[in-house]
Length: 598
Image (tube, rainbow, N blue to C red; front, side):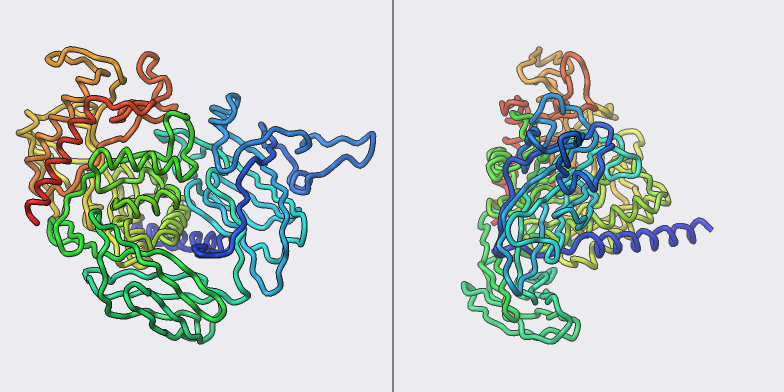
């Protein structure tokens, strides 16, 4: 009976995901398109009780006469920067959770024979979009992009764009009510108008076949269900091949090539051009092979150790959401200085600018959706939302070769509902993208004496195991660090996806009796963890939590936290703590070992 119920729940989940995707999010690849950027200062109305009338606000209603008044008006209203979160821009909105209405007037010159789309990089968390008083779409999820076709609503001349944004935490949201980072609200990534011809290239997937170093497999989807010629051109590789679409408008790509493979040492990206009918899409794409063989992670056929770090999409010095290429470069430069070749983008899909820049700088990436603790897997609505977010993440970044791992969740407790759901999502991810590895970070293990056993049944459906374990912080050492033995029921590689402890920068104590919250205590715990790592024969990557201290109302220790998680290797001002140097030394050692093997 329970199995039948779970099957019905999963079917309902997939149905909801399909409805969300088809009805609200016409996915369009924007790379190389003609675009008009709408970033800048937008007028806003703070709707504290979510009582604003959409029909009046979406039309920017004006008083009809001297005795008329409009309570919710954009006239002389305050402004907020887009992209950006509202929490860091105005002190009264620091902890605000609710509705804010955004308004932007813009001028557009309408062209014959063009489709017009509005593209939102991210809106946190729920949004309704109105163009010239017409509701053109809605979206749920604060970290994935969405596109809305507005060909019939956009006007020649001045246009009125209004977006209702709500970031209220709810039990049926993803993430749910409790999560350990700041609940930033707002239009947090860029807003763009994009044009295509009447018939256009809707999407494409161009990557190496899994396990191959010279065989490209992929597809191009044309907007119209008819037969057409599609030309794939990679000039630097001498490739100019023609493929034909089928009667559904899809052309399948299959060709043998000779390419310089992308790697952290040589992050080669090729200019790629796809032409179909009167439309052309251009991109910069890298090619690499990623696979698992036993307990090894193989990059381009060679074993690799993932020297990782996690970071939030946040600029600690500004106490706000990272929202520009400059912000992305700062975070990635810190990671490069640490000696990393791998970044866990936690706990949600981060901006396309971050993903693309990381790829250019030679970072392998882990991307995950915010299925983070406390998720009600028995609720079909949750399952539908998770699947929709998973597909949106894969759709946006499937051509980014730097992404090597799709992650399904973080620290979810085993249960029949959870296991069945994530098993199905793993299968869905592999169908959408058969070239990458699947993982999920978990924190439930069996400890006996000095042995810790990885026995989570989810492991069966993953390519790479990933554990979060804060030895010496939340978890007592079951033995001396060098005597702790990790074992697994699965012959698969392991990433230590989170470990560490909190330390207040500048708080010091004796090295011998280092107390909590000191840099010395954090430094020693890192040394102990590295001792433990050396005894794990199937360990293929480490990923400390976290690059820099970050804001969270979850952490309110009056003396040391005050709304900050202090586990960063860098302080909230970007200063290096003592543990930074311990990790950098470990990564230098790992890099030297890798070079000697070559």
